[in-house]
Length: 218
Image 1: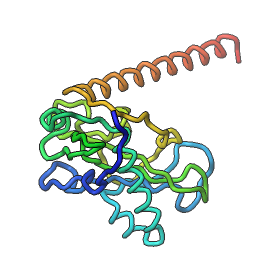
Image 2 (image 1 turned 180 degrees about the vertical axis):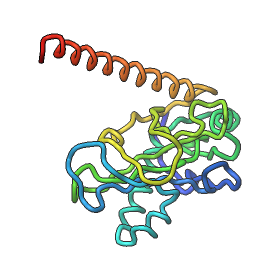
Image 3 (image 1 turned 45 degrees about the vertical axis):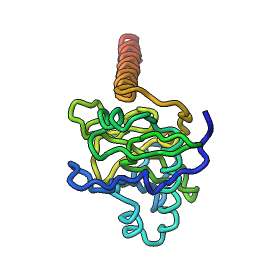
Image 4 (image 1 turned 90 degrees about the horizontal axis):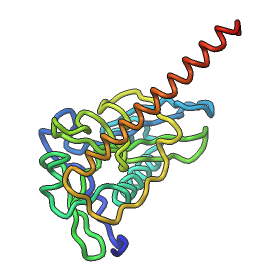
């Protein structure tokens, strides 16, 4: 399959009136370390609805906001799920929440970018970005949440102050094949289960360690 030759990034944006919780173009932007912070995650940030809101709130960061937004769209085009039919995409993400994607003469469909994370890993460092997806299908594991392009869950679909970790900007694998209906939702569910299992193991290990120290008077 040929690699992407041209992408209409503007088409990746959402333009749907009446969508629950989000505005027609729903873009979440977390601004982190604007006043400076240490090098330890999690980092404080903010979730915005779109790049215009980012530019309005931080007029001195207008260029950084726009560059990060463009980068987020490119990352979504590269690593986001791709469907051969709009029906398969809509089944997972909801009506009016999918956009056409053209690559090397192929026409696919992808979920619209529902938001992007914008912040710095270190003080005075370059601004980073990562796109988000969401679903308007109530039975979807993505409903009411933001997820990364690889299906990992970021958190609830909420705008306002937030926190993020260094791995929020990890590069996601490039996707060059179409996915079947329900496939991305299954990935989201599997990754959520893996995260819960890892968290449970970590809590159990920490509990045993504390119990052991207590038993030995440590």
